[in-house]
Image (cartoon, rainbow, N blue to C red; front, side):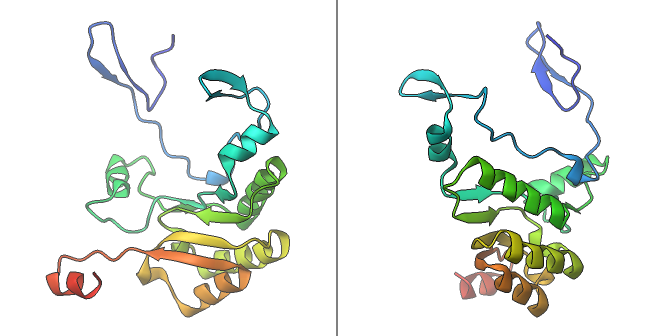
Length: 193
């Protein structure tokens, strides 16, 4: 059993936590493979039995929404957020990184090839809207033409939102956004309650 894998913590024989060296963050996240959603050689616990996943079981577990992180990290440093902790690690964890439009489109196409039940795409990442306008424009044009499904962005940072970005995304099929407003000002908290 290997105990030297970077980023992995484990118990040693003396019941002490061993903290292995931290691996640097991947800077070009387009080099990360797509999630392995293929149902070949995969198993699931179903009705108290471990069974091979077939297409029907796979589609049941994946459901009608495909979830995809288009970015990693966040350009902000909010003390209450896990991204702030990552930034303190260093080793490029402080960098906001986002996938190319090509990678995003290819991953969604891969998801659609695995499940015919996908009707909607969700981007739950913290910094989607912080992508630059050129990246959003390329994504929106290709998404509208090649995917065409409604989608949501579940974490909008208001300071990075502008009329052009939102117009591009709405024209591509954006149907829902979620905006988080944090403040230490009690009046502001009451206003948006």
